[in-house]
Length: 284
Image 1: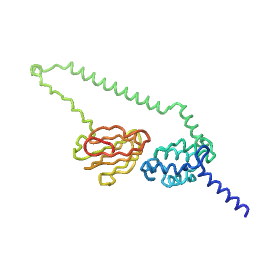
Image 2 (image 1 turned 30 degrees about the vertical axis):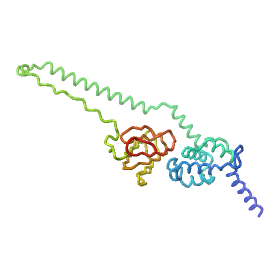
Image 3 (image 1 turned 60 degrees about the horizontal axis):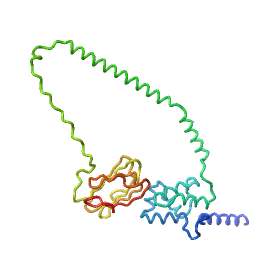
Image 4 (image 1 turned 120 degrees about the vertical axis):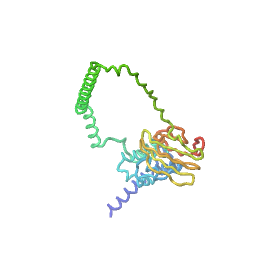
C-alpha cells in the first residue's frame, strides 16, 4: 500500500509540472499548448491544415495543444514539433521551447549516440576523395575527345574529296539557286495564362524552391484543391466570382493571377490567406 501511494504522488507532480508556468512567466499566462491552440485559431487554421503544413501527425498536434508531450518521442522531438507548429501559426517558437525546457528541467538538445555516429560517418565520408566520380569524369572526357577527333577527321576527309573532284561545266554555268531566308522562330509568350478570360478570375500556383500546403476554394465555397504543392508542380483554378487561397509556406508558391506574374506569395514559413476576383489582381 505504501508503494502505491508514493507512485500516485509522483504522477501528480509530473502532471503539475507539464502545465505549471516557467520561471519568469506570469502565473496567469496560458500554457504552451493553449498558446499554440489560440495562435492556430487566430490564424484561421484547423488542426488538419497545421498537420499538413508541418508534417506533424494530427494526434500529436492535439496532444501538444493539451500540453501532453508524451507522444513526441522525447525532448529532442518535442522541441522540433514546438518550433514547427509555432512557425505555422505565427507564434514565438524560441520562447515556447525555452518555457518547455524550464518546465521539464531539460538541457539544450545533444546528439544521440546513433546520430553522433552518423554525423561522424558523414564527416569521414566527406573527407575522402570521391574516386568513383573522378573516374567517371575521366572516362566521359576520353569518350568526348575520341568522338571529337572522329568527327573532325571525317569532316576533313569529306572536304578534301570535294575540293579535288572537278565540277561539271553545266553545273558551273548554272545560276545559283536562291537561298531561302530562315526566319528566327517567334519568341514564346512569357505569360503563363495568356488566354485568361476577362469575365472570370484565373489563378495559377507553381511550386518554386520547396513544398507548401495549398487550399483553393471557389466563389460558392467549393473546395478545388487541398494538398501539398511540390517544387515544379502547378495548379490552375478558374471561377466567375472569386478564388480563395490558404498557403502554408508562402515563399515556396509563385502566383500568376489573370495572366499577371505576382511573384512569391510571401515569406519563408509564412501562412497567407488570399482572395482574387476578375479584373486586376487584388489580395483579399
